[in-house]
Length: 108
Image 1: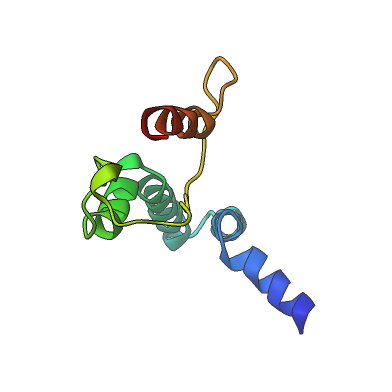
Image 2: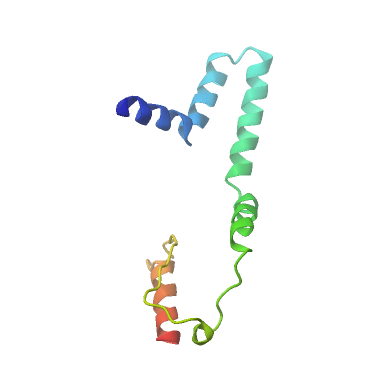
């Protein structure tokens, strides 16, 4: 059952679903619906991987909480939990590591 679940997960999640749709287009290329499927697939790929859609999704989650600008006014805390991802800059420095170091220098 575990193997079946993993196999289905690979097929359903990106990029597996895009590859399946594009393979269906290749197999049935001569049919009109296949060309329409290609167009729809490419539009969905571009829309879902665009920064505008990502910003709209992120905004709906992050807009509920105001940013903590001055941590001295915050309630006492025992730990700071940082949930984030990172990106490598051209100089090879992780933007996350640089941001955390900068925050620590300013506030601690």
